[in-house]
Image 1 (tube, rainbow, N blue to C red):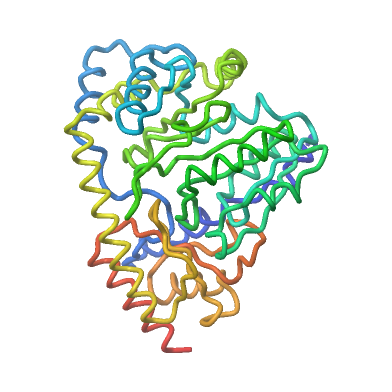
Image 2 (image 1 turned 135 degrees about the vertical axis):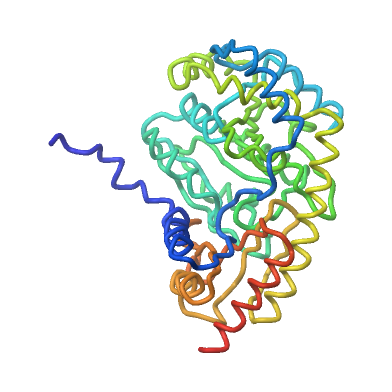
Length: 387
C-alpha cells in the first residue's frame, strides 16, 4: 500500500471520543452513565429553528447556497453584532462555514505556509494544533497557568516569537478552562502580534455562555483580526454543523476560493434554521438556558470541591470545570478510566488539551441537569473513598 502522509504521525486521536466510545459500550450493557465528557449542550435545538428548517424543507428546493453562505444569514449575524455588542461588522466580511472547525480550516488554509509556526495556549482545544499541522504548519505550545487564568500574555508571546511565527490563536471563553480574556487583554495581544507582522485568531465559539460578566466580542474594538464563532454552543445547534468567521476584507476572496473547493457551500437546511437564531423568541430560550448552565456550574463546583477536587480558577464562560486532581490520583487518565468503570461517570482527562501538566487535570462538562450533576459528584465521592 502507498505510504501514509508523514504529517499523520503528528495527528493524535481525539481521546475524549475514545472515552465516549467506552461510555456507549457500558450503556449498551445496561450501565447508567452520566456524561460529563463531551462539550455538547443537552438541550434540544430551539423550536423556532426546527420550525424554520421544516418550513424550508417543505418547499423541496434544497440546493447549494453561495460558498460564503446565504446573504440573509450574513446580514442577520451583522445585525446581531450591532444590536448585542455595538460592533459594526459588514456582512461582506462574514463567512458561513460547516461548523467552527470549517472556519478554522479556511483561516489556516489561507494563512499558513509550510513550516509556519502558530502559538497556541496549552492547555487548549486539541483540534487547533492538529489543524495547524494538517496545513504543514508547526503548532508551538504556550504553557499557561492559573496566575493568568490559563490565558497567554504579551510578554509570553514576545518571548516565544521567532522569524517563522505566523500568528497567535486564543479563545475567550476558553476550552477546557472556561476563562475569559478582557477586551483590553485581547487588544494588547493584537498590538503585540501586529507589531511583529503576525495574525491574531480569536475563538469566540462559546460567546454568550458567560456567567457574572457580560458577553463581548473582540470585533467591538478590533477589525484586523480573524474571529471564529459557531451556532453549536450558545445556540445549541451542534448536530447542524454550522459556524461562521469574520475576517479582514483583504482575505474574503481567498477564503471564498478555498470554501468553493473544500465545501461547495455550508448546509442549506442548517442555514435556514439559523435564520431563526436571532429572533426574540429564540434568544429568550437561549438566555433561559444560559441561566440554567450558571445554576449547574454553581451546583457542581462546590460538590466536587467537597469530594477533594481543586480549582485554581472558576470558569466565567463555556460549560466546563478544569479540575486539579493531583491530590486524588497520580494520573488524570487513570482516574478518568476508574470513574467511568466504577462510578459510571464519564469525564475528560487532560491528555487531550496539551502537554502542560495533563496528568494533573480533568475537564468536567456541566451539560446535564442539576440532579444528575449531584448524583455524579456523589458517585465520584464514593469511588474516591475506596482509595
